[in-house]
Length: 406
Image (tube, rainbow, N blue to C red):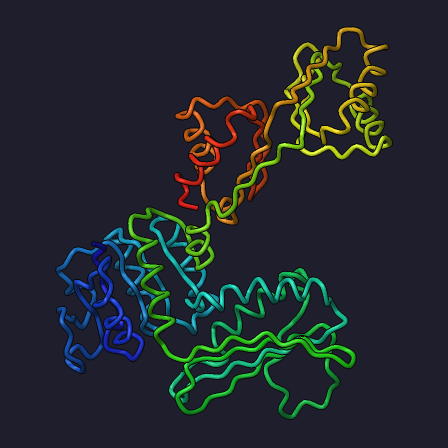
């Protein structure tokens, strides 16, 4: 059970979070802090100031006001407790202080805790990359009439996400009242609407010549933010230091999402190949001229000016590849070539690999327990590819599926 201190517990969001936490078997609010501790009856003790809190907790969740940040950071520094900041309206100075504190304790900050919004960041970045400067970008955010800050923190985050694609070359234009200039190609318009009980709506519009693309996210209640906040709190419990955001939380669940195998490949290893970049370039150039599609490539470090070079290719192209390597052997007789035909190329993928350590180690451990040898390994930020004996394909796949609950 994760024990939580809720900072700003009697505010509208605080009460929604308290209700959501009461229905969550994995988390317990042990204390609350609010400027008006008696304004709402709670099933946990509520204090007016953090210094009065007696209960021990695993994490503190803040849904208060930006003015409370200095005292909040001071408290987590003294208590060495992870902090989840869900408050918006933070200044540049506030963000600097948060980053500074994250070097001493674990701090989570997100402009918006909705899963949909955090997916929206990726969607609009993809759209911006494809559409480029040919489309004007406008952001419209709508919230209830009690929201204090405008534009919303999420609107800024959306603008920043798009602006990353343009290497932060665009400036922000906040509304156009009393402006008599034409719209600049280097601006992103940001507009705020306040009214009624709107929980939150954000639209990023890409306006081009005779066409418009809009990406919109609508929150129909505060419940989506409460659930996101509790998910973040669970993720942060036990963290020691570092600055985290919602991307870390989402990717934590996606360390491995796909596994697939390929039995159409063969592997070739060229041993004792002279370590000459020109020779390596000529070898792969000759293979390319034969129309051979090389997949995995692995090279050992040079020893005595020689390397071992392994790569995979379609089995149907094996003879062509061997003939091509034979031409290199003519002028380099020390070369020895090994061919492995009964292999399986096994690939493990997941977006969470980019931010999680130990995924490769876990894959190797799973295979080792099955007694499965690995002939070749290549990796990227989100993919691990292995060559294993074909006879071990079923055992390897089943073991990885079980280990990562695919």
